[in-house]
Image 1: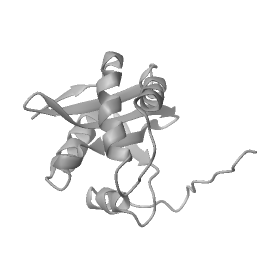
Image 2: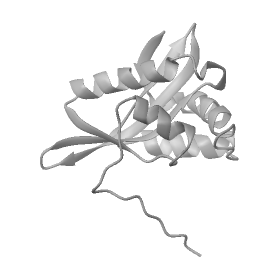
Image 3: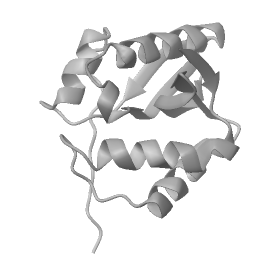
Length: 146
């Protein structure tokens, strides 16, 4: 297995993985290749963007993508998307991917990783096993616009 930083030119390949992953359980979304590519392009195109891809036998198997935020006391990385090829779920690949991302972020001077995920779902348990926990001082809120 090898890892490499995400390049904007990889978006179409990443979009295929994204659609496969998030259109399956537990999310059951309805992404298309076009909407996924647009989302990932917007996320990957900028100085603050950072992500990595994992390949096994030349095949894209996982991706992590987010952005850096500078605060007065250091850099926070907001993990926005993380997915593993459906056929590789449960193999430990996601854990390897997460720890490789952490290692690379430490090298970049990142002091904290944040993310939003569905409470009570498979994904929350995955991140808890990676050492993440809920925070007392941050709440995720939303408002539907009509």
